[in-house]
Image (cartoon, rainbow, N blue to C red; front, side, top):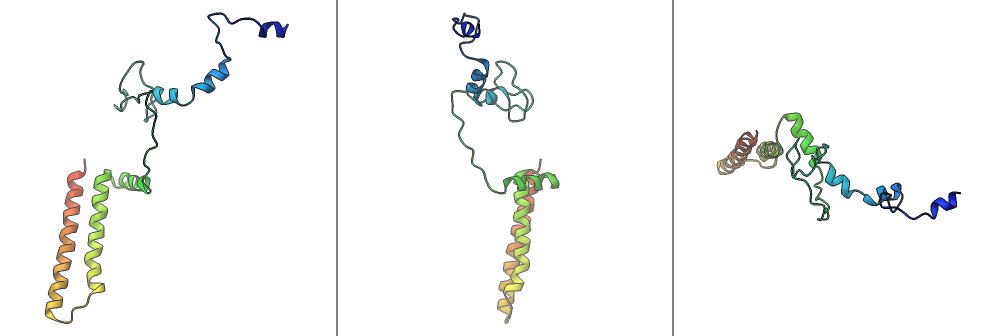
Length: 143
């Protein structure tokens, strides 16, 4: 009896293949077009996500691998803990680096004459000006 059921022709309302094979063939293309990066589902025939405003990916275009920058996740988590955006966090870290550079000038260079002392002071001033500029940029980049 089961052999007779397998030999029947498919009618127009039946799927030409079993449902499990159809789901397997769909793959990830439907998942990408059905859900947004934020996790919400797209509204039918919408171009943008109603939750975050991201545009819907084009199903005809193959999704290329994104460039993954090492340490970007740690940088973003540091920015979240400090309450800063990513560019403001980068400016803050550059300011800290310049502050350390101003302190390091006195460690690596010693003044034997007045001219040497003046040169070291000018280098410190340059490092500190760079730190102030980076901190100001961080304040301007903060939302």
